Length: 135
Image 1 (cartoon, helix red, strand yellow):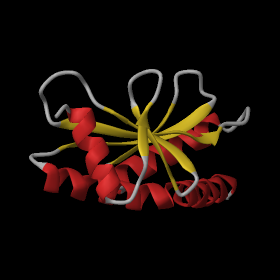
Image 2 (cartoon, rainbow, N blue to C red):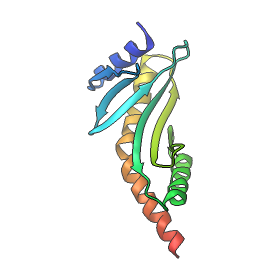
Image 3 (cartoon, rainbow, N blue to C red):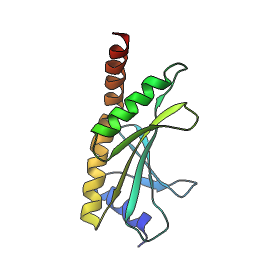
Image 4 (cartoon, rainbow, N blue to C red):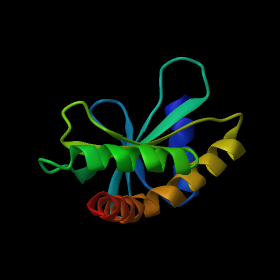
């Protein structure tokens, strides 16, 4: 079984229907969010769960969004929140190694738990940091 097939099997066990997209990445929906899992072709047991376009950046918000991303990346375990090179979107990713199927399932469940909250946390942090800048 390939790494992608193994990950898709674990996703099925936790109740999620996944498929391979045109780029060969695993895609699925979680709480109405389109999520991707990217795995490399090497033998390393490593995966990246990606939630692209978490937030669309309006002109003039770049500094506030960067500060929000920095704060969230520092505070959340497993999660990285960052701005794409075009400065148009903020995205989040969850990167982890796993030793076996049990560890893979645990990391996926934990990542999905945070993913379910990341958009709300992003908005709350934006609001909080925005108020701090006004004072």
